[in-house]
Length: 193
Image 1 (cartoon, rainbow, N blue to C red):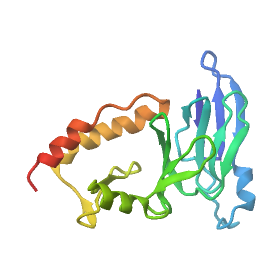
Image 2: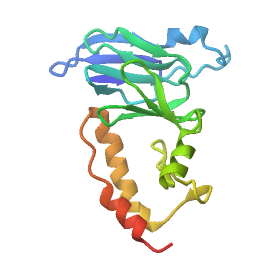
Image 3: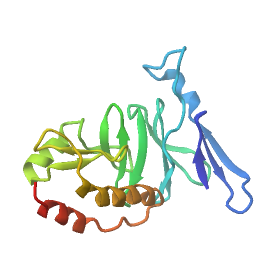
Image 4: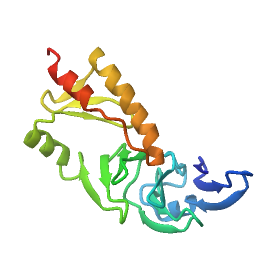
């Protein structure tokens, strides 16, 4: 069992007895973080740890994103620039992070490289134009952005889809296969505007 706390600690507990197996303190990594001041430093790990392909992923609000060894908590990689992250999830191949300052990031779990992002290089906008996939959903708050309308949208037709996405968000913390969502997308596309 791996959990994270508001003091910046990530802790692995034994499943049978709850004993601490290892602890990784991310708060110390904040000392050299730009933008953090002495009066107020947000040091907490806001994300639920995600285990996938033998690596644990967590993000500290100011210290960045970490890939940790599940056996001892050693840092496999850390990207300090990935800040303000509130959610991590995976589809089994990619790591997805939502950041208040960077938007949605599609990250390679092997080395932390960003492959796609709304804010970085405008990939989401380019994808929307090239593919006619006009809707994007934020995993942090499940809001829906329409690139064709250039605005957020709400509709009762979205409630079932958003519930399914909420289930995906929580299931993917354990590297499970996400439920099939194509039928929701098809019904939404067929609905009158």
